[in-house]
Amino acid sequence: REFSDSDNENGMMNSSQQRLGFMVLGMHRSGTSMLSGLLVQGFGYETGGPLIGAAFDNEKGFYERIDVVLQNDEFFQAQRIGWSYNVYNYDSERALFDKTKGTIKFREGERALQFLNGRHDIPYLQKDPRMCIALPTWLKLLNHSPAVVFTYRHPLEVAMSLKKREENFTLEHGLRLWIVYNMRAIQNSAGLCRVLSSNDAVNKDAFTEVQRIADELTTKCRVKRPPTETLSRKVVDEFVDQKLQHNHKQREEREKNLPILEDFGNGCVAREIQSDYTVGSSNQKVEAEMYLMAMSVYCDLESGKAFDEDYEWPDLVNMKRPARIS
Image (cartoon, rainbow, N blue to C red; front, side, top):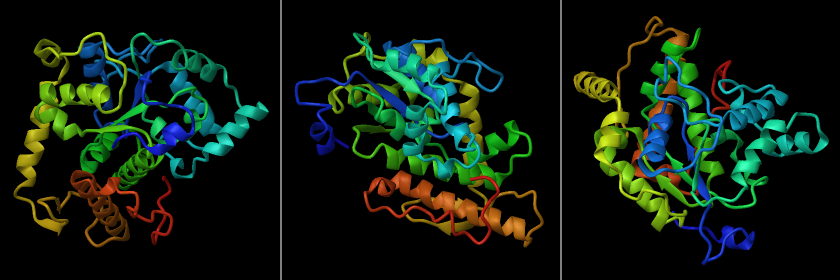
């Protein structure tokens, strides 16, 4: 997607200007940390800091500014939202109202804006999965229009990863979250210059895919050139977790022999999944419905249909049984 007319109408961009930086948008557990790390380590994009440190589930770091994450949590908590619940109901205008009225703290946000709105000789990279939800709030606080790198991962891989990491986290919960985060990321970044990718593409050929992303940020979105313009294979070899690539290939091999539940066309299918619930139970039926709903969106992401302006997203509100987590 190229610049939209709204960039010029708002006075935020003209043909001679360069973008100061970009935001990486993607659902939790979707490879945003690995992608951000490759872009920072490989090209020298600037994150500022301090950053959230490495953890057991992300040993090479998250590349997330602590102040942005804490401020997004502040926006969320004022609306009784957390990163994993009620995000569907986030109101960006209410967040701005809360900030203006002083009903929430904005100390972390001020610190973040000093960096994001400051002078940038080196283009910045900002990454926090919560930004998929909170982006409209931040866009009204920025003095410029950022570019966006959007990436996504297979919904079942994300849901299973969350189920393994989080306590009492169901597959249905993870699948619903996957839909909401990807839906909001695409809806909220409409009109911005986007570079699109996927975790599959990075896993299959990180060197080629990440170089393409950096090139498009410069040529398509007119983000300032980074200090290094050519990715080195050494960075890729040191940063990409070969175990993750191996596990991904193993999953694909296992799934080849599973029965197909629904064929969405263009070679994109939903295959039978293992459930913790009794076959035919109400819980199993709702889980299967959510899985097929997520797979429909995933296949539309793969084909590009989900990026159409008139794309119809799943109606999560009016499902027969609204999940306790949205």
